[in-house]
Image 1 (tube, one colour):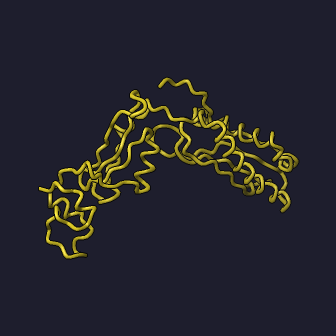
Image 2: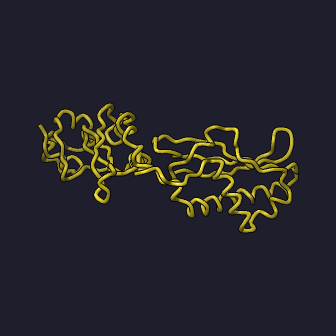
Image 3: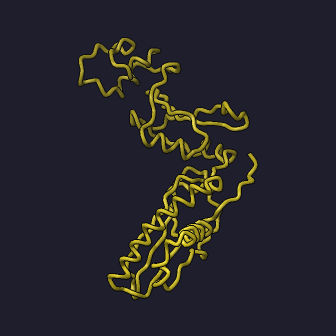
Length: 247
């Protein structure tokens, strides 16, 4: 896939959110009392294009250290194809006033900006689409080494296949060599990480794997809790029985 998407940086995003809210007439009370609003243009990270949409915009209000009240704007989540979460401070809004009325206006503005951040992103989502061609290095070099299901280390495989609707795009899944749990296939590392971390995996009936009996028994959570004849291939419990090929 060619990288021909018009992308926003964090600076563009901050300005876009404020413009959307102002164009809707939602920030009149805020504009009446603010001293300034400013994107964090001095931060190099905020100048980079954002190439993922699995992040949150967060607006928080508090008193400044010496004067006034501040709204701080943060991005938290996946901002590119690396599969790593990031947290960026990408904008500030300040008023010199400090009374309750000003705090109410600033607090309400946080809710307004939260709403229009969602509105802006939904209307410009194509600017944040991940580039699938940048994913393979992540999957080859940054594989998680702990199975979320059986808690063993060092035996997670990354499965790879061509996307059924786009033969130029690869998709990936995680599978544990030891207990056989496997995720769906995803085109982005962020989606794959999210599914794995949320426990969205199962043993594939059509993909039963070869498991040594002692290895399976070592991670079996039923052992010691239920009567067991140590014949895993005949286990009455589905999660064990689906690993039919035991040796």
